[in-house]
Length: 249
Image 1: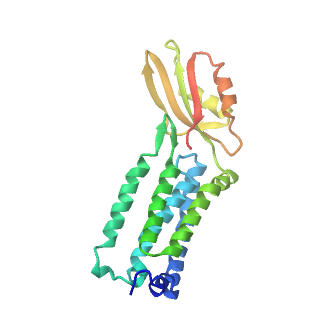
Image 2: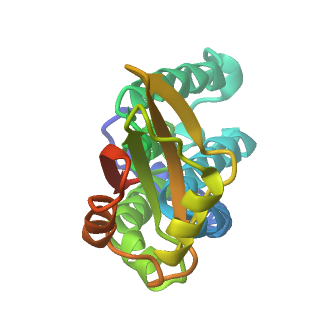
Image 3: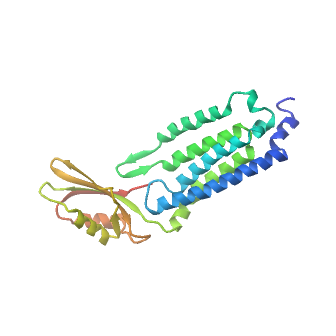
């Protein structure tokens, strides 16, 4: 049978093949919802990886796992897995290589981390490619549509849901000034923020103490804006310089 014959190509869209794709899609949808649930908890507490990142990774992992249960439907059912090289080893190499590629787009600037969602989308794209490669075209198309929709509109859902904004703050004090943590915590509390436990870092540069920490808003809409925080810090006695930025992206 020719690889370009209508009968050969129709096997990829046969009723059993489409039914298997639907089962795969339902697994992907369930994984996406569960990943979004876990990601929302992280997003609510101001962590770098939020709903989109968790949802994409969970869904892609489900895609690469569920297809292993239907080897008889791979490649339109034309080739048995016993007659060829183990495809799972090829898949393993793909996702490992793409994982290293994703790590290259993650950037950390102080307390700000960016590129996590891009890295997750790259990993999801590898899962889409694997689905296309083994002939699960319907599932691949649906996974691509869900991934694109997640990246385009999930941020709006995150903005609508209750959340706590996180900001990164760097304070450098004058050499003759002795900062106190309790006073700093009280000042941040008055601004509508609480210093995240375990985030405080203290270093010394030219005998000047430098404090870095992440502050999380007490609730949605309760934290002061970055310009308001900067204006308040500019009037602090003993402060040599400061830097305020969003702690995640």
